[in-house]
Length: 328
Image (cartoon, rainbow, N blue to C red):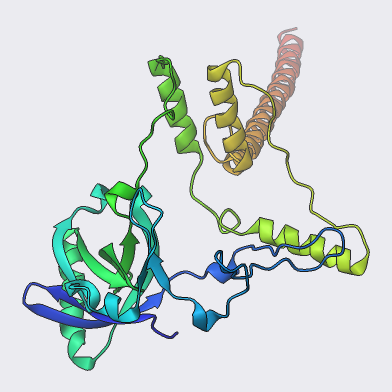
């Protein structure tokens, strides 16, 4: 990767020369071009001068600034911008260290990987990274990127330092008209049911963070080029309609989430339940067989006892008969 900017991080009296690399790739996202629907021709944005009504070449385009509440545009040259008294033009000065949770996610902008720009920067780079990791803090400062000064956050990530551009607080719009107009009461059992549903979601899978929309769009394009119908894998349709019973919907959602992960209604793995069922069946069969064996042995003993008793009776009769003859 090529660095998009080079500057120094000022950490007290410690200076760390770094190079910034784009951490995200916007070209990988889905983008469309504008076309003329009648003939498919490309519709382009042509730079036209509003005063003369003619197209302007790129080398004739400069910068201008329009003050608030004014229609006047003041031309600004590169020399004017270079003369700005910006200490952040070449240095990101860390102003404070705060907890990462103190940063409003709405302020998060583009991210950059920060690498060392000289061998001498390796030790202070690692020092700053490990200090923030142990202290569980992120650094806040200012930096001028691409001709504009911006807030920036530096944080450690997987052995490296990452810089996140932040919006200024005044760039965050107020929430006027966003909140519900009337007060809504939520019961404790509904909150508990919602928490149970949250716990049942589990972790993200690789399929969850895969760009299926891009794949589906590419299939439509390929089908149009091949003059065929697009082919999509059948998937479950999301439930439609207005939810009337919130509690029932939460409970149904918990059951559906557990079922999708192969779990029973109690959250236990269904496979282990099936195995325990099979083992229970085997155990019952063993017990039944044991009972039959015991019954068989008992019957055999009874039959043996009967035979033995019959033999003893016959022998006794014989003996008594002989005794009678001798007495006579």
